[in-house]
Length: 263
Image 1 (cartoon, rainbow, N blue to C red):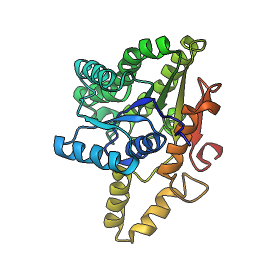
Image 2 (tube, helix red, strand yellow):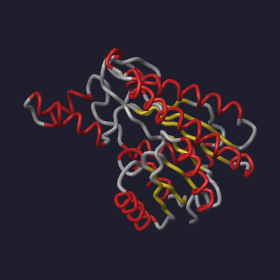
Image 3 (tube, rainbow, N blue to C red):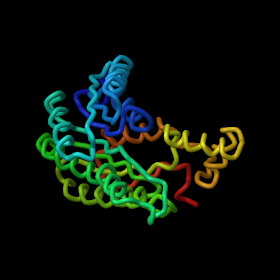
Image 4 (cartoon, helix red, strand yellow):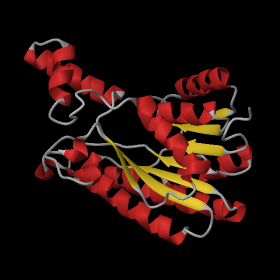
């Protein structure tokens, strides 16, 4: 059976590890050629690409694009287009965040978060859209969050940019509604990403409790299910949106959060 996304190509930002890598892996397993991206040493990125290619049989490349630099985003999209014949699927996943009160933010921290979390998604979309429209098919998926719909203390950059991604998603969806391109936002709850697991481990050390206990205490106030949202489940939802059944879903904010929205 021909893989569902054979002949398609994708860029997934922030995809050398964690949720981004899980989504890239899911797309590659369905036959898409994938460009991984991340600010890691070239050897690490190339190794991740080679391992994913060996596992899935897909064409996988690594791009070290710094998403705070518009010129590098332009080069990344151009290189992916030259390498794979276009960018059919764009997953804007990369994120940086700072855990501190508003008055402690520096201008540099704020500007970096806006650049990577929000502006990079806009620039990547504007660069990928002409080709998508010309081919009459495209999928843009922005990774928002539960915090795209609610506030939280000491993470103003994250809440602001994840909320703004919802607006960006709606605007792109309306502009592209008759073109064969869809744009949606995934809104995960807490996933077991390296950053979150490090945070839980730090809590466990600080409280002198087992990591399993710290993880349970961290999750329960958030997810009624009492567990992390699985990386592979977010990735499966992405693949669904990129498949035939996703053709009529656009402008949607899709929670996958263990019931957090229902609280």
